[in-house]
Image (cartoon, rainbow, N blue to C red; front, top):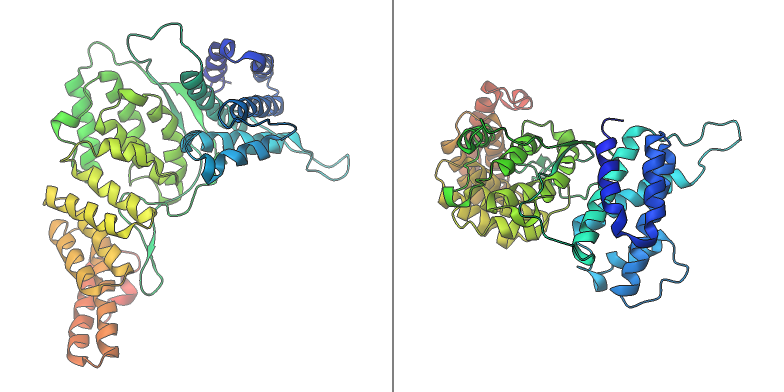
Length: 430
């Protein structure tokens, strides 16, 4: 219950703003405290349906009639109504819909068969999304009695689903753009979120101390921090980034990256307009890893014109959107901004290997090796680029060039093997 109670309290704070949905919101909080988690999901679904019926009436100027939740939600996913509900809010609505549908139907056969079981984790997942929806709706459609003088520190969260980056090499092997890049959408909400308030920094913890800890996380992720004029300075914002940044790190196992990123998104978005470009960079990174690239957040991060990590992230987002021209431009810009930043060079190498433009793939991967000679993965990919170019030269009758590239490929694979790459041993042969 410790994860659920802060959510229930937040819903109680929001309840007075929601008209005829108040009864279901009050029933939801009562059921939550009584551990009736199936009832929680059902009430959340009903509240979402009421909100959508109101939006159909006010925004689309249509009569919702007897339309059910799935039909109402599909209206706002249509291209004609794009932008009425932000993409990230639609994703949260999909989560409430999915869990609400699951809990509202009997999936068993005989009366003595085990039916659907709903636990605390599912309730927390749905209510995290419901709180995000209610907060968005209140901010957009409900007139506030007064504006607070300072932002309320957001809540930190933990955990749903999906994985990381991918383009394909000419041989079909999966190529991972550094930093994680989900080309397929996440199945939203089919994971577990935990909710707890972000701690306020004590007076003894200075912004400079917090800044130093955050810069250390950038170093661990081998990315340059933003220029000083684009950095967060509010200690509360720095605390949020310190809590959320590890969820977006490449140290997170690949299979868990989407889940961790989706867990971080609500806390990151809770600061909304209070972020500097640095904060928006983390929102954009989380959205990309979670499979829902947020172009608006990315554009706000790019307002910092000399932020190499943001340019690299924008390049990866462009690849996710199949905009390869912009991807090349962004990645080249990132490489120009920081001569020691190897990731944009590596990502350009993978992109050209995918196209395939093998001379350019080799060129950029060689530059990545120069910037980061100890990273096994770069040597391995360079070996693949040499091998692909050797195959192309051989098929064109350029036997001497093919032999030279095969030799270079073997040497690269052997260097990858020396640095511990798990697939390189079989390719490092005499």
